[in-house]
Image 1 (cartoon, rainbow, N blue to C red):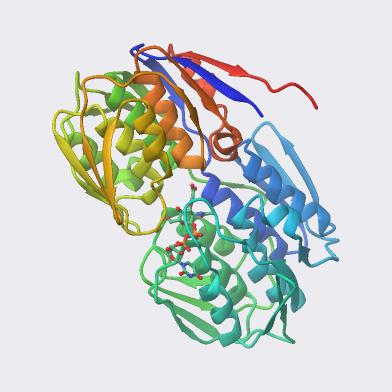
Image 2: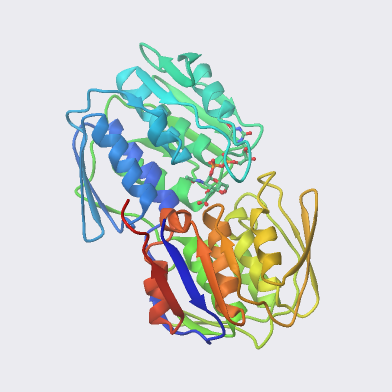
Length: 421
Ligand code: EPU
C-alpha cells in the first residue's frame, strides 16, 4: 500500500486546476446504462472510484475507455445486469447502477453495500422508492434482486434527502410509464449535473436542484455528442482549507464558486481572503485562522464532505471551535489521528470541540476514509516535522493526483510506493 511522506511547514503558493467532480462523474457514468449507445463524457477525473464504475460497466458487457480526461462508454451490448460484491465492497456508489438497470432491462442484481468507515449507510430509501415504482425486490444472499415488466411513475417522499437515492430514482423514472415526483429530494449540484445529462439525452425532468423533482417518463433516451461534467466543489474546498490552514496563497482554476457559498462564508469568517478574477479564485490564508463553529447539513448547507478538512484548519486556530456532524453518525475517525499529531479535540456524540493549538507535530498516521485522509494531509502540511500517512488508497479514490498538485504548490511531499507483492 502506498504511503505519503510529508515534511510540514511550507507556505503553499501557486495555482491548481480543479478536476471534474467525482460525485457527478459516478452517477453520470451509471446513467449511460439507460441509453444503448456511445457516450462521450469530458472532464472525468482519473480516480480509483471512477475506474471501479468503469469496471462495473465492462463486466455488464459495456466498453469503457479513458483517455486524457475523456471517458467513452459504449453501452449498446450490455447483457449482464449484475454488480458483484467484490466491486460494491470497494465502492458504495456502485448501487447507482440499480435504477438504470431496472429501468432499461427490467432486472438487476446488485450487492448490498455493507457499512463503511463513516457509518451504517443503508440503501432502504433507494429500495422503497423502486418498490413504489412497481419493482419486485428480494434480498438474497447479500444481493438486492429487482424485477419488473415496466416501472410506473408515482409519488415518492424521502424521510432523509439522500443524494444517491435521489439520483437512482431520478434515473429509474426517466424510462418509467407516467410521471414520478420525488419529494424532499437532495439538492446537491451533482444531482443537478446528472439531471442535465439525462435532459441532454431527452429525459423530461423539472425541479432538479429543488426539493421537488418531477420526471415524466419517455420511451427511450439518446446521448448528446459529448457532455462535460462540473468541477469538484469538494476538491476546491479542500484546497481552500489547505490555503486557510497554511497561510498559503493559491489560485484555484476552473472551480464554480456558486456551489461553495457555505464553505466560502465560513472560511471568510475564519479569516481567509478570496479574490475572484478572470484567471480563477485566489485564496489567501490568514497567519492563523480564527476559530469558527460549523454544522454539516444537506446542500446548500455546509457539506459533510468538508468537515474533516475544516477540522484540521481549526486544529491550529485562535480559540475554540465546535463542529457538529449531522449527516453521518461516525464521521470523526480522523480525530484520533489528529490527536496523535498534537491536536486538542474532544468528541461527544455528534459534536467535536476543537481547541486550537500553536503547532501540530508530525507523526505516523493512518487514513481511514477519503475525506479523513484529506484532513490528515492538511494537518501534515502545517505540522512541524515529518508525517507518514499510511493507507492512502482512500485518497486515490477521490482526489486526482493530489500529491502532484501539492508538489507544484511547493509542498514537500513524496509518495512511497509499496513494493509489488
Ligand atoms: N440514508 C438512509 N437511507 C438511505 C439512504 C441514505 O438512511 O436509503 C441516510 C444515510 O445513512 C445518511 C444520510 O441518509 O445518514 C445521507 O446520505 P446520502 O444517501 O445522501 O449519502 P450517499 O448518497 O450515500 C453521497 C456522496 C457522499 C456524501 C453524501 C452526503 C456520492 C457517490 N457520495 O453519499 O460522498 O458524503 O452524499 O453529501 O455522491 C465522499 O465523496 O467522500 C462521500 C462520502
